[in-house]
Image (tube, rainbow, N blue to C red):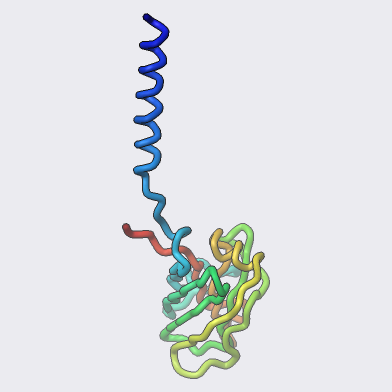
Length: 154
């Protein structure tokens, strides 16, 4: 009589575990086609170090299906010579340019989109890309901001 009872209890435990596992919803940014990123752009993370009152923000939307990265970058108190996306590993170092977004930008905003390849997608998702805005005085970048995934809200 002990063996049938053990089997029955194991069956019940298995059914309960299956119920718990199947009731868990898998949600998050990995399930959406569009993933949002942002960047806070200032002189604090520049390499080599620059001191500037300039600042900006970057808003990004990445479409995982088309591999398009839409960007809208705004800045103030700066006259940039270009606006670019660079990569760095580790993220706090200076790295090579990946995308020139605008040479001699006019106004205080740059927007558009670029198509990423698999390697660039990986760099974006792992936080290795940053916006770099150089000037005539700071040719390596007067302000900079790491492109990071926005918090996911349920």
